[in-house]
Image 1 (cartoon, one colour):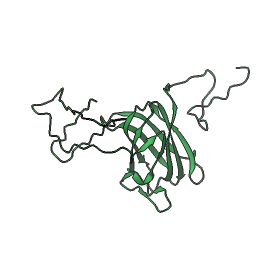
Image 2 (cartoon, one colour):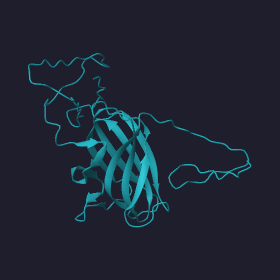
Image 3 (tube, rainbow, N blue to C red):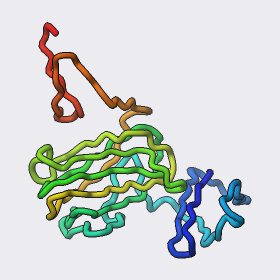
Image 4 (cartoon, rainbow, N blue to C red):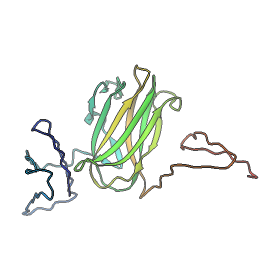
Length: 220
C-alpha cells in the first residue's frame, strides 16, 4: 500500500493509517516500511505500530453499529437506539471493512425536524482518499418517523478498511434530524454518473427514488 502522509508539524496532531489484511496464515513474516518521496529533509516520525484482529469491525455489505460511531459537535447516541441532537456542524464517523469492492448505496432511517443537508463520504482507512460520496437534502422528501431513505453513492468502494463520515449542515438553526439503522448495500460492480440531461420541450422534476423524473407523452 502507498500512503500519503501529511505534514502535521508536530506530534500533536498525528494521523492514523489503517491497513486491512484479508488473510494472514501462521508463519514468519517481514514487514518493510520505506519512504519513496519527501518534501523536505526528513519524512517524519513514526509512532505506534500494532497488529490487531479485524473481527470487531463492521463489514460491508451489511449494517453499521451506531454504538461504534465517533460523534462530534452535537450528535450522540440516545437511549432509544437512535442518533439525535444533530445540528449545524455536527458529524458522525464509522469505521468498517469492505469485503466486496463495488458501487454502494447507504440505507438510513430518518426523522426530520428543521431539515438540512447531510454530506456522505467513504474514505480509505490507509490513504484517506474519498472513494464514494453523496449529498442528501433532508427536506420535504423525508416524511414520517424514521422513514427509510436510500442514497446511491457516487464512486466505487475498494476492499479494505474504510471510514464512513456524515457531516450535517443547515442555515435555519435548530435540530436537523434523528437517524438510525445505517446499512451499506452493494448495488453493482460500477456505476455511471450522469451530470446533465436535456429532453427537448420537457422539464425534469425530482423522482421518488431518482434524481430526475421525466413524464413524457406516449407520442413524444
